Length: 133
Image (cartoon, rainbow, N blue to C red):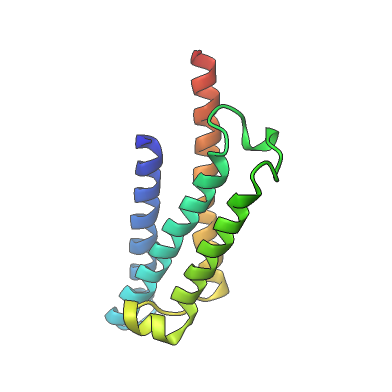
């Protein structure tokens, strides 16, 4: 749990810092840079949770050894969470309430790639844990 929490925290904070400073370098005003960096960070955290959920369907077996449809309710939950996140990102009333802002496809892809970093860490952790038993 410590490793996962640390990876999620570093990924989220790292994503915020990288995006914020990148936008400032591009000449974006500070308030807009903060809003975009915060939106990307929240999105990364949501995607980290999705990756974690998919990988934790078994604490001992690799994701690749499990049937994709061993627990179909997982995909319903993921669809609900992703839908809520898309509302958070792309609807003006949510942008006004939370100070979020619409993200480009490239920004969404980047957050997804950052979240995927968690996947090999979890697979390695399972192998190490099983090796010790």
